[in-house]
Amino acid sequence: MDSTAPTSPPVNAVDDGSSAQLPRRLFGPGFFPTGLRLNIYSKANVIGAVASALAGLADMDVLLGSQFGRLFHLPAACCHNSTKLVGSLLYRQLITTRKYELWYTFSTHPLRFSLDEFQSITGLNCGAFDIEDSDSEATAGSIMWQKRFDTTVGDISVAQVLEMLRNPFLASWKRLCLALIALVDGVLCCTNKTLKFTPKYVEMLIDVPSFLNYPWGRLSFLHTLSRFLPPPVSKDIPDPLHELRIRLSQQTTACYGFLLALQLLAFEVMPQLLARIPDAGNTATFLETLPLVRPL
Image 1 (cartoon, rainbow, N blue to C red):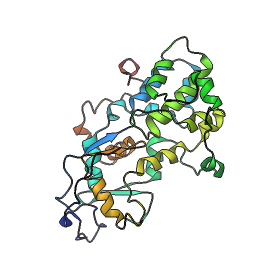
Image 2 (cartoon, rainbow, N blue to C red):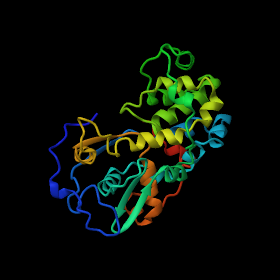
Image 3 (cartoon, helix red, strand yellow):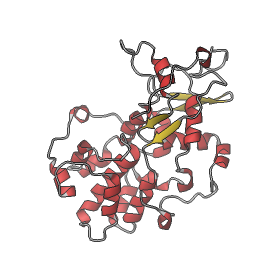
Image 4 (tube, one colour):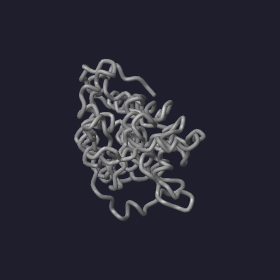
């Protein structure tokens, strides 16, 4: 997934904890990595493509009334992935003890990114998983896969399904399901560069109401954090923080989940950052920019 890692960051790149008010930084001031290229898999224009394909249909009303509704009300101009901004946040990560939250700092101002902030930005269901959810597995030759795609389980991508949604002759009963899986695998829970569908998620569409109520926010958040938390201590990884520093010092690093939520949180907390993106004053949502939506 990532390019070959560089040598270990120099010892003086680690913060010595000189600040009495904030925890230590992952990287010492002045020793931030340079040249990091974030490969963000999530594509926000999938939201606009779904809105365009379902415009005027009852299926769109279902989406707007569900946990996915707020995604369509995000300002489209602010939803272009800014790898420079997100990278600058990652470099300023603080070392804290809580497992499922990240802290960053600009100057002396700390910024928390936890499940609470993620839910506030996205509006997604971030509740707990049911036990059976974590234990269930997709079956080979999925019935739902066969019904939706007229083929056995294989490599179907978000781009292919968006093309299907644009087909005016597509069976109406397929539209909502295809739109849902495109949002999940193309925006929220991305784990591969080509945005191939996850058979397990497709199989979950056998019960659409249950799919609509699933805690996709929690799953998306966990995917998002997975690349930016220290790995567990093991025989091969005796120093997790050192391992994380190396990961963030690579020439290229993959980003899963919905990292855009962190970018939007930064814009909300520090509005002055909006000056760094083009057309920041344009507050039109994905629902209001349908003619401008471009395919993947």
